[in-house]
Image (cartoon, rainbow, N blue to C red; front, side):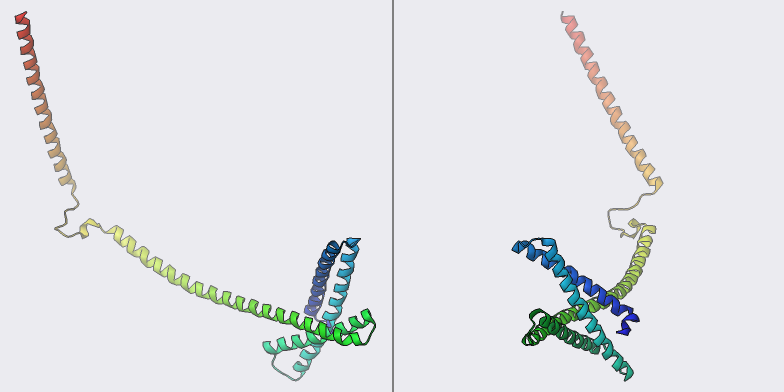
Amino acid sequence: MSFLLKDRDARKRILWGTAGLGVAGAAIGLNLAILRNLQPIRRHALTMATNWSLYGLFFLTNREAILHERLAKKESLHLRPLLSARETDEMFSSVVAGGITGGILSFITFGRRAAIFSGIGFFAVVSAAGQYSFTVWNRWRREKILRDMAGRQHGAVIESDANGLFARMGAKMRQLLLVDPISRLPDWFPLRRLSSTEYRGILELRREEVRTELNSLRAAISAMDSREQALLSKLAAYK
């Protein structure tokens, strides 16, 4: 067990695992006490948390010791540490530690040697299931990290291509804005840009037309006034 004084990661796994099992035990004890109406509720929750914490401490310490021994043996043989081999060592360590813990707890609880084998089998299966679940989750997490890294790299390439595309599009837009779009139209198209002189000439022509219309209106109004005066004069003569 002296390796625990040097291996900081192993100590963290033991402490966090023990704390997690303690919290889980407290939650289960609290719910059972509420459902079964066991009083006092706090005492049952603390008892369950203590039992689960002790199980977790004993199990995780044995697991880390077995795992450290297997890894040290492979290191002494200069074997290359593979990920699959690491997962196999973790599974073996969890099953053996679970069996040892289950056997001891069953003997302490029931006091019969016959209960040892059932405790070994049950806790070994539970430990194997837990280790398998953790391994599957860890693989999924690694694959997700690799996919995210590949996606960021691919996104950087796409972003670079997109920036180049946007730059080319911006250059084309500036070129289109600098060139008069109407000048690109064919000669037969009924739309063309007028020069300042042509526009002034059209305005002068429209002004002359307006003046002509105004003069015509004035002449018509004068004629109507003349006829009105003549009629008024005739009416006055009749009276």
